[in-house]
Length: 185
Image (cartoon, rainbow, N blue to C red):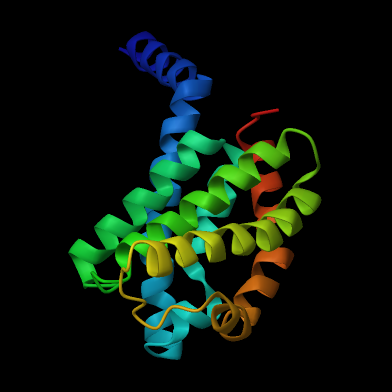
């Protein structure tokens, strides 16, 4: 009986040490974080907390830095879609814009992180991501005639400055801790 328990424990340890399993589990957990963290911020700081503290961005950026572009994209899409289905947020009109924004960030941070350290990658992503997102908005609004829904990159930077600061302070440390703890390096 004891041999069977030890054999099952060793098998589970082998499965959990597999890099693909770590990738999947990490992606799922970060997607859940991308759903739960905005709820916590909204409960603690009110309805405008998402725009101020950018909690969904945190999970997406961590996923991009830790597991790469596919994981970050899954976290972005999963967080937004399931958050909307479970909580009604973000508003359906904002949902596609947020998805595009988060996909831009995860692509940039993942690609840049292959050439630079996580701090440089994150800073460049925060700057370049907003420039690219502004271009996407200009095309969507001016070129395609889509409604603006009050979206402004300049205003989102002003309002989201506390969130950007949180990202710069926390995201690289968390990504590094996950990589070290999961032995991904």
